[in-house]
Amino acid sequence: MAEAEPLRQIETVEQEKPIKVPFLRSIRAKYAFTYLLVVAAIIAIMNTYPLFMVEDMVFSSKAASLRRQALVIGSALSVSETLTREGAEQTMALLEDVQATRVLVTDGEGRILYDNSTLDNRLGDYALMGEVVAALDGQDVWRLEYRDGAFRGRAAAPVVYRGEVLGCVYLYEYDSEQADILLSIQNNLRSISIVIGLAAAVLALLLSQALTRSAGRLLAAIRRLRKGEYDNRAVIRGRDEMAQLADEFNRMAGRLQTTEEARRRFVSDASHELKTPLASIRLLTDSILQNDSVDMGTVREFVSDIGDEADRLTRISERLLTLTRLDANVERAREPVELNAVTARVTDMLAPLAKERSITLNCHFEPACALLANEDDLYQVTFNLVENAIKYNAPGGKVDVSVYHQEDMVVLAVADTGVGVPEEDMDKIFDRFYRVDKARSREQGGTGLGLSIARDTARLHRGDITVEPNPEGKGSVFYAEFPALVEEGGGEQ
Image (cartoon, rainbow, N blue to C red):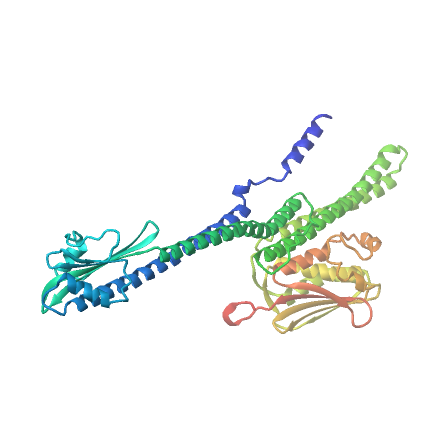
């Protein structure tokens, strides 16, 4: 057995170790990957859309320029009914603004009459090109492409004289300068994208770490709370959802701390309260058993004391069970109850006790003070308040019991002329096992649970109990307030 205990402790410590989440499965990684995907999408759009736009603009510009030049040249050549080599050369000599790389002029059969190429001059040959064939059929054609780092454009237009096709004009343009500009733009965008991508990766890691730091703090706080550190709080600044979540956690931890402290205090107080009569019973029984010369009168006195302590144990047990039922918050069966009738029953029951202690018991009832409640619970609340007022009153004092309306509430007021409740104790007298005067309370057979049971019972019926000093100068006044029953509609306000 001595060796098994350390093993259990080691197992408990191992179970309390925090679980490490792999980076790729962590929230931090998910945040980072999300940012990177968004940045990657932006970079992809930045590297494609502008290039497509520039390329389309260049294509449109070059197509329009080539077609315009072809039409101008064709119009200039269609001044006579025949198209000759000399006429083509003279006309082309007059056109100085032709920007095409190569210009061909053919006759109606497709033979080349003019060619400005200095490397591959094909005068007299047939121009076996699709654009030329289409132009000789009377069509205006053009074609552009980007290939091998250059823009290549082709355009052809017929030379028409009085509705007859005399030949065609063919233009070819090779432009590497604008292609270089486009390539330079592409390279610059690529370089910028690389820089943005690296910066985005670093920022994604930093931002994801900043975002998940709050979650990590909250998770650590939850783990410490699970270990029983109820005074632990999560410190997360800001006004975002994580800060609100931490605030709710701190409130929950505070409530758990209060509940745990109350539970420990309750267990300690209950153990102490139960231990006292048990110790008295044990002492009395030992006195009887260990003393053979005890006379019968003493035995009877001791047995009577044992019975009193047993009764005290019974009262404590019953009230603990009552508190347990109240804590369970079981729904009570409610019905219209006249508080005057219940209070009258209580005062009739306690009148002999008041007479025995020379206490004057006065009652003041307003008519029609009904409420929706459980009659037994209401009787218990009233009995506890009136009984306490009698027990803890001064000899020759008085207790005033009043029932009246106050706005939409029915109020039971119990005023006594006893020693009263000190101001510093007014917030504590409803705590379980709390007594203002412990010695006198024990003499009266009190358990320190009556007021706590009364208040919890009142709150179960949407009411409450408060205490104030007696305005007459001595004693206290306890007020039990409940929502009044409204006859109209048969409901409760």
